[in-house]
View 1 (cartoon, rainbow, N blue to C red):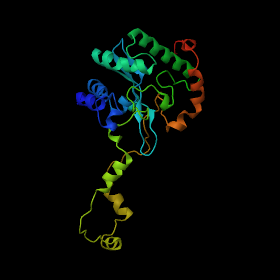
View 2: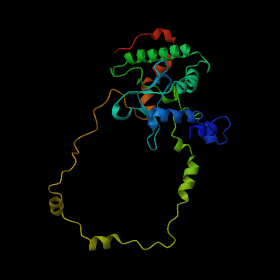
View 3: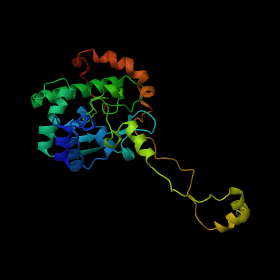
View 4: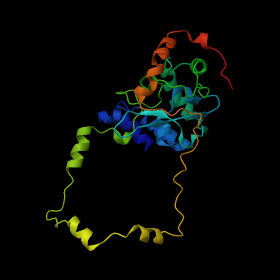
Length: 262
C-alpha cells in the first residue's frame, strides 16, 4: 500500500488530488510501524521527531469538526507517548522533510537539523514562559495552523488533511444525488393513526418497567482537563497570540536559548 502511495502521490502521479499529498507513502509507513491514529499522524510536526533517540513524540491530534476549520487538539486519553520508528524510516524519509521545514537544504547534515530543531523548541518554550498558563510548554504552545511545521500536509492548503476528504464538494454532492428511492413507494402510515392505535405507556408504567435497572450516571462529565491545551476553531483560538508569534519569529533564535522549566 505504501509503495502504491509513493507512485500515485509522487512526481509520476497523474491524479491532482493524490499529488497534493506527496508524503502519503511515508505517512502510511509511520502509521504502520508506530500504530498511530489518523489524528496523531496529521498532528506530527518537525519538532516532534527525535532522530538521535529514534522516536516520535506524540503530543497532539489534528481534529476536523464537521462544518468547521481544523485545529490541533489534545492527544486521545490526554496521554503523551513516544513511538519508536525504524532508523531507515527516520533518516531516509523524515530527515529531508524536517530539514526543509526548518529552512535547511533537504540534504542537510543530521547535526544541523538537530540544532535547528532544538532552537525551535527553545524558542517556543521561551514564548510559553511568557504566558499566564503554566501548563504551556514547547510541545503545546499554540501556533496558527497555517504557520505550523506539519510533517504531512496538503500542498495546496498547507494544512493536515484526511485522505478520504480530498474529493471536491461537487463530487460529494454528485455522489449524494445518485441515491435513488424505490420506484413504487408504499403509502406512509399516518401519524395520527399510529398514535390512536398504539397508545404510549404512562409515566407510572415506564417507571415500574425500569424499576430495579441501573441507569448511567449522567452527572459524570468527561475526564479532568489535561495539561494539553484544547484548541477551539483555529482563527478564534490563535488570534490572541498571532501578533506576538509573528513578532518573535523575526528575532534571532539564539536570544531564546533558555532551558524550559521542568
